[in-house]
Image (cartoon, rainbow, N blue to C red; front, top):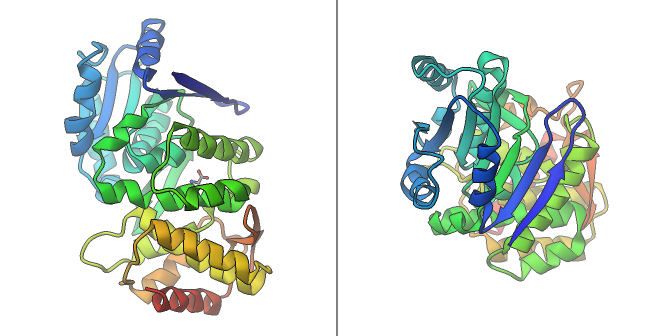
Length: 355
Ligand code: GLY
């Protein structure tokens, strides 16, 4: 069975979301009604090996597509990678009537969407998210971009995918920890908007199609209210101020997975909420229990100077005041715009004390 949702943003193409086991039939039908000059599929090694063959097995629409396989990891979200991709597109004679397809997780989506927004002044693009994190977040809402000088997503655009095709079974192709790490982001939706969803997810280890739809419905409401991230939409970043800064300043041997970074951010930002916005001790403990039962403890390895620099560069900040999203209650977030560095450091000390 396929469920659909539609996001309409003024002056932008609407994004139509299709979710279910039959989504590639819908994609096949869509492509038959269009006359794209070429399909260009952006993949990484994992999605080339695990996801492309699954589509190829039943559908022929990818037969003549160009495949651009990007290297895993954030290094693909750089100016030099961007330049190489554009050179390849020119070499393949890709014109503005082509269709770009992002087949992958957040990194693939950020870069595909960004190139789609600038190449020949804009090319249609569709999204096929393959990770749970991307299915519930990055595929929807039009944020695209690359990193610059170690700061995440400093250069980018808003450019909405025309269609989003979510095939939940792709999550089976993920390493277990990549799947698990996304659970923090799922909890986030409950924390900012829906207490009963938070309590439901806290008691689960995995999510189903209905839960994915619930996350997308919550995200869609925030994006519809504020598509270009000037107010309400910022609440989707609960857990991300600290999470992003940790990713940027991480010195551990292996990169910190985004979902784990967000999980740490949820706990630290809940801790600051308790201090600054009246989040009760009872709810704080419920958050601590929910997050720690779904995500493993992570030993913090980061460079404090780079962490502070990243916090100061956060795109939410304005007029040199550091903005952060805090909770008044579970299910109710606010934008708080006077974060002190002392509160930040204290919250990290709290996290270290429970790991
Ligand atoms: N991931 C947060 C947003 O799309 O606004």
